Length: 411
Image (cartoon, rainbow, N blue to C red; front, side, top):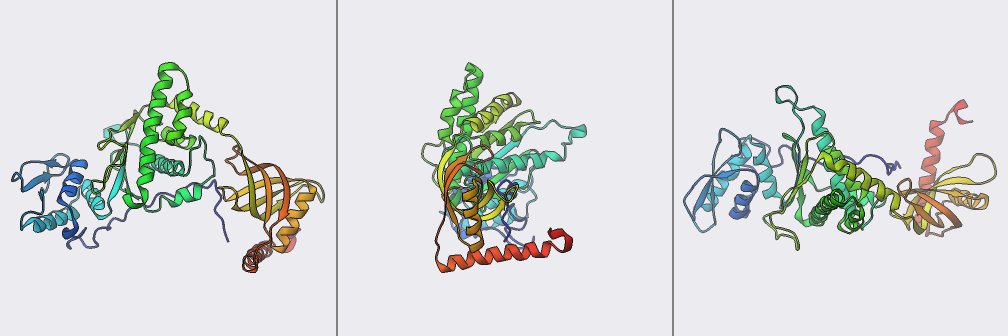
């Protein structure tokens, strides 16, 4: 079995498919008009830049898409109180599905899956004829991905530096996030309310706390506010994401917009203003990141894991082992340096397919992947089914080794 290294870059958050709301341009697509709330549709249109330009008061509004030239307008009923309301909703949804306006698809996504929205904007200097560097979109997506991961990590607990802890479960929390296309330095992520509301709340709080801490430092010269900001979810991972977002721009903004189909979270403003960051904030953010990395304490742990690698420089003496963690730490693998006797015990446990238990301190240096002060290595008894599984895994590793090493390559 292949295990992805903990420090491997996180895969890009899944974009929503181009035909998520229909697979033929001439067919009615999108949500069922019978399930659409006219007030929610109007709120989404307004959020995504559509303009209301008249309409029969109290009955329907006429909405035109953003940008010059107008385009096809929509008639959206204000309620379902009139007999033709569902027909108007159906016509509006078909028009949105056929529209070439990027915001039309974003409105349909918000209707299909009630979602909180996270918006990022980067003000990138334009090149000749208003062109932007081709790397700008990738930089925006990378920074947004880092920021979502930082928000998910903050949901697992407060820490100035998370390192490899909880990274797999945090990445899994992003599985349902949909991401729209990048356009003009703007990117939108749709986070389903049912599964992702805590992530959005934590990210909203941490961004505001980071902004306040930066302002405090620039006004007083003190970094103390960053210590308190940890409670709001600010971490080295978030400061690194902000640096990646702002670097190379004239400024950047992030806004969280709550799903109109759900209630606004407690203690959150219904219409939150974008949080802005500028290149002048970069030195403070970098210093805060170093501070979090330096000050995050090591953690005493008792780890149970299976030995997957052993190494030492000679036939005797201390050696290093790599454990696949079963319990006791929130990382997939750790490295442990053991004295001769403990190394021998770990080697024997590996050969017979038993996990071991060891005490030590999980060091923040290296991302909480190293156990120091290790002592008391003991094999752990497991039931027959688990032992058979471990032995099968060991045999697969040995078979792979034999296939990879042939002839003189296996000295």
